[in-house]
Length: 229
Image (tube, rainbow, N blue to C red; front, side, top):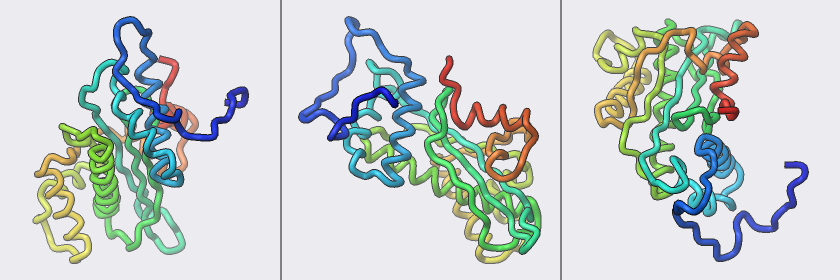
């Protein structure tokens, strides 16, 4: 962008966007989704002044001349007891539009309480990811683009998946019990879907722990997006 001329406003005055007709060449939809997703993240974090134009652009995410359903997906992961000072775990998640674009939302945060098992650390991380997924659904709806399908969240701990679908398994603290019932309610409402993925495919690993170079490069391509396609 170093050679681009700056603009005083986020969009042209009185700009009205319409679906492309056959006489115009369409842009790369994967690149377009990635760029709009990045603007969406910036807008909701620090730049509310650009949200109007991002709202307009987000109505053409799938293809400049169609307005079909857009699917969001992501991963949730935890580094159990990774902090040697207080033995608290670290949560990490990210979300992106389905395809080769980069992540539009992500979080890395140390958990507020000590988890007694890797499963407990994972479902605490999942609770945070589900909350973000619900926020993203609401945001897309506000943009005039309601989501028709659940947001898929990958998880590599099968015990965590079982507990998220069936919270009444064994005694837990009230705090964690509430998190599990919250997750299950959102799954039953089909707002999110939780599925198993192998640890080798867990891109959120890069957010919670240090990894070998090969894994870093693999997960970086997913997280940042492969725009060469």
